[in-house]
Length: 160
Image (cartoon, rainbow, N blue to C red; front, top):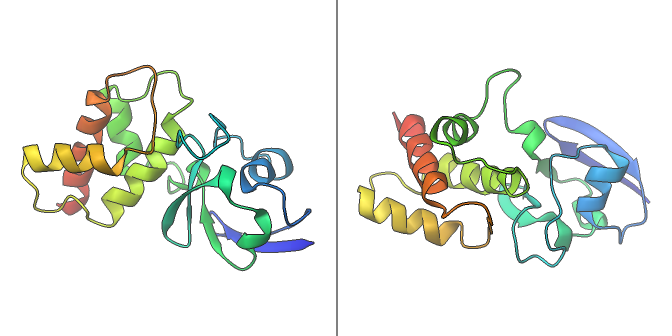
């Protein structure tokens, strides 16, 4: 099956079986290895991508479901050399450690930040909301505080 999709702002076509996981097509067929496989069961969030404006686990999506749709991976998060606010904040706040979960967290966090889901929230409310919104992203290296801090910094930068 030929699948055509808008991938990171470019129209791409790939010939694959429609049942192949989106995660595998990204990594193997399209050579976009930023999206990571953690659990392969939709539990860890390492493979999070944005599909038609929604954060999804790419290990749970068949490529056949992506025909004609818009997809953003971590490779498409930056605009050229300019990192997304979330990427900058994760680096600045020390929220990125081993790197397995970081792409999925960055994608989920960009979804939160770009939709303004933290707008107007005080610190306590924002921290609780970030933790709730990132509940599907597992990080084994940190206590999440630096990740939460980074997302709040990014959200404030974007709303200014």
